[in-house]
Length: 95
Image (cartoon, rainbow, N blue to C red; front, side, top):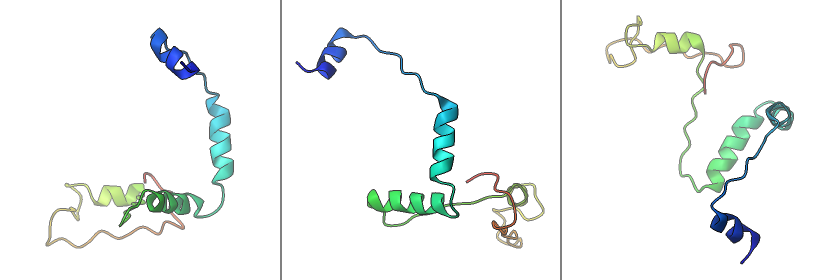
């Protein structure tokens, strides 16, 4: 019986501690270049065998425009389309 099987047979969990600050610093350092995160997401999709990929980059202003009670509700086909944000100039709120 190997170490993994012995651990599972004992029925005990072992605590794992992570230095979150160091982990965040490492991730930020690794993906610090322009478009690096986008490239990584696309590479992960390709590795997983995805046929299509859909990634949304949303600013706060864009999300406000697409709320149901906004001047241009997202679900109203007669409404004008919301203005797409310039993600090179505006801060991203969610993606």
